[in-house]
Length: 288
Ligand SMILES: Nc1ncnc2c1ncn2[C@@H]1O[C@H](COP(=O)(O)OP(=O)(O)O)[C@@H](O)[C@H]1O
Ligand SMILES: [Mg+2]
Image 1 (cartoon, rainbow, N blue to C red):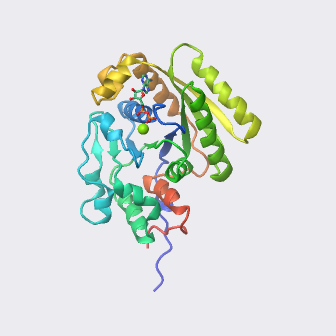
Image 2 (image 1 turned 180 degrees about the horizontal axis):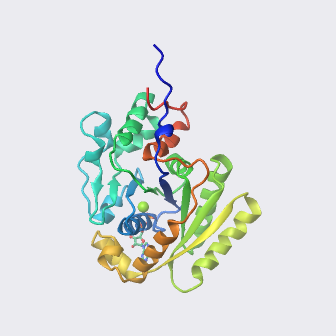
Image 3 (image 1 turned 45 degrees about the horizontal axis):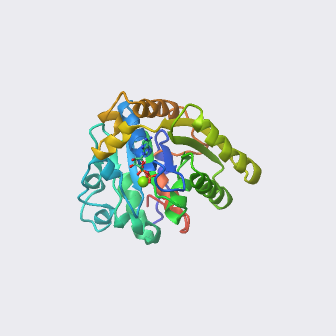
């Protein structure tokens, strides 16, 4: 007998805002931005999930002082449920830590892919925002996460190598992954106007050579409080809530709430994963 042709999209609730935090170079503060932006969202009352997409050098859990016991690999093996993998921070951020199991995502069989997507579909909570912390460089996983997210946040430092690496990331994403809009956050700025100035330098090159739109979303100052918070494995918003960096993250979270979702943005985290996993494989039908 023919199965009813139902797709999860028809049952989808309000869209999840998915933000991939990237930037090309290592050490620009992608993880610090992911962790603190997620914390600011959660403290502002948004249901927030943070996925560690730095598959080789996962450190979201380190910056948050969490100790993951099981991973998506165990979920795939049927040894634990997804809700057992997810950890929660004191601010209420739901964290999906990275593991070697996640690194295999790109090579999963269709059955395994469907199992992961289904696992996210079984989460009872509804998520307002999903932040994905990506690895340095322009490896396949970074490109996949950025392509699947509806919003790419490029973390930029005022250094020549950061500019060239961010340009390279934007170039590859725009030329071969269909991403044409990028939000740029200047990190570790030392004086007023430095963020705007480094943004303009990046924009001058992209305007000249690429068909993309860049949007400057502000800056996070260089702040010893953030370094101390990382040492203490806590978000700066919790360790030093009145520090300049914490205040800047609060402003960014406020602003990000208003970023318009692209047409066709879909609800539920499993759609993000489906978009990500779908690239090499044919489209998955989620419900049989
Ligand atoms: N706004 C900031 N002020 C001071 N130090 C910062 C700031 N952002 C990042 N850092 C420093 O940079 C280091 C690298 O940050 P991290 O988030 O691990 O970068 P990435 O994930 O891009 O490799 C942190 O350990 C911290 O010491
Ligand atoms: Mg990192």
